[in-house]
Amino acid sequence: MPRVDRSDRGFTLLEMLVTLSIAGIMAGIAGMSMARYASNAAHRGTRDEVVSLLRTTAEQALSEGRTYCVSFSTTGWTTYRYACSGPTAVQVGSANSPIAADEQLTPSFTPTAGLVTDCPGALSSCAYFYPRGNASAGTVTVTRAGKSDYVVEVKGLTSRVFAQ
Image 1 (cartoon, helix red, strand yellow):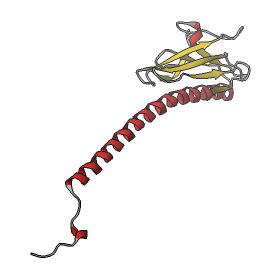
Image 2 (image 1 turned 90 degrees about the vertical axis):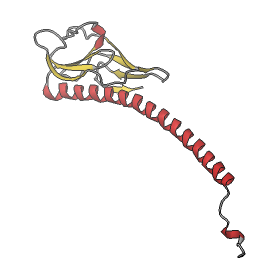
Image 3 (image 1 turned 180 degrees about the horizontal axis):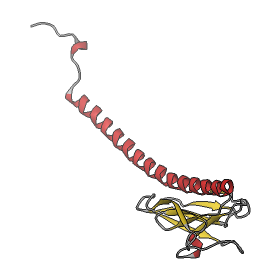
Image 4 (image 1 turned 30 degrees about the vertical axis):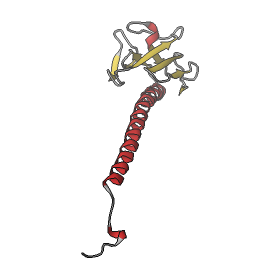
């Protein structure tokens, strides 16, 4: 019988099972972490989308010299030129369901005295941006179950938009 060198024996079945078990546990932990990260990233993405929408609308109002309005619902928004409702309203953009099913938008805007503030439904659900660089002041809260809320704020005097 030929002599077997100790270094040529390979791995035992027990060593392979232990190694595969450890690798499986580590892969499971990594998978759960990635799912949590993806959920948080989607929530931040909605906040960033709202910020981008409001900033773009403010820039359009200023550059074109026209009033723009963003009408919010709990699940999306619609952008109008001139007013959010009435005979002069011209829809220029819409996102009926841009957010996840378990997310919700809660707008709260203060109408600017003496300026156009028509709004379908609840008056506090429209953000107006005017040609002189001002806006209706207010906030949009982005809520998702089990996550911290994000608040997007619009300053009335300067139409500055930022997330808190």
